[in-house]
Length: 80
Image (tube, rainbow, N blue to C red; front, side, top):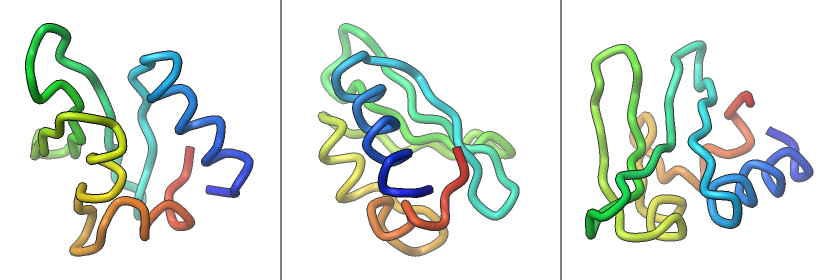
């Protein structure tokens, strides 16, 4: 994902409250929301529904794990 794409992706999640999918190594992942729940940001791998829950989008970006690395470290490798 380029810096421009990352900015648009992040804005979609944080500012526009969108649910977005992306690919990592040809695997589909989702960032979605659970409204009315304390931990409302979800990072989910589609193939097995493995889900990580976070209070905020920033927490997801800094603490979410994809293939052993933090989400933010994987951004350049993600396809959107």
